[in-house]
Length: 336
Image (cartoon, rainbow, N blue to C red; front, side, top):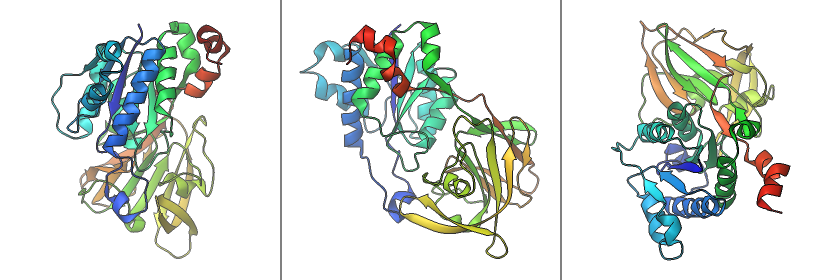
């Protein structure tokens, strides 16, 4: 099929954590440059149909404009999706849905954990290759755009059987609100006292009540670093972990990097290993806000009942390292 999609989130890495911390900023001009390198890599690897999500900054359009003189044949094979924009995560969800309908082999994303979560909600079983340009980046890596484009191109030309060898299925956390599935997270759920969504990003842990994660490491940035101080949870482990956060006192206190340049002491209690599909009750405090992968999304009021559970049937990611190291790819494309 040799068709890929590119979703570059123009708002990733621009939330309040950037202002109160010391975070690396990947501006939209640099995102244009990354997309250009993805296009060059993918086209060089044989991709002949590329779809790009539109956005208010026109990352895709600027990329094509910059490449027009040098790569006219390639630019002619790239299309910007026609779709309405509302400058929210819905743009990424809609774009992923359209790309899935058009039959792309994989979707490359530029953003943080929140961007990957949004894309996964629209992509279905289409594999995702996430490039980090966000604030909290437990899932995306800092992949050079050229390599991402090459990997996507090589992957798109494999047989369906060979493609499956380079896919990693992720875990996810499911929110059940009033006995109906409400939403998902790929990395963490945080329950925060209050009812204010506001800036959406979570950066102050003082009102934190409960955290659940699909993976954890003290090397991560975000809420997964809290649990990572107790137990490392790998992406392939068939379980997650949840904890209740207490006020300072008789509890286990850990120092965690909640955001870039933002280090806090957090009191942890009720450490629980979550097994697949077994629901965990959300703490009995109201009102609270549930943050999914670092962004406030759901408000729970007095009458609301809510729980969460971990599932092993999350989105598929393209294992670009394994792909690029594969003997079949090395021989076929003579890349070494």
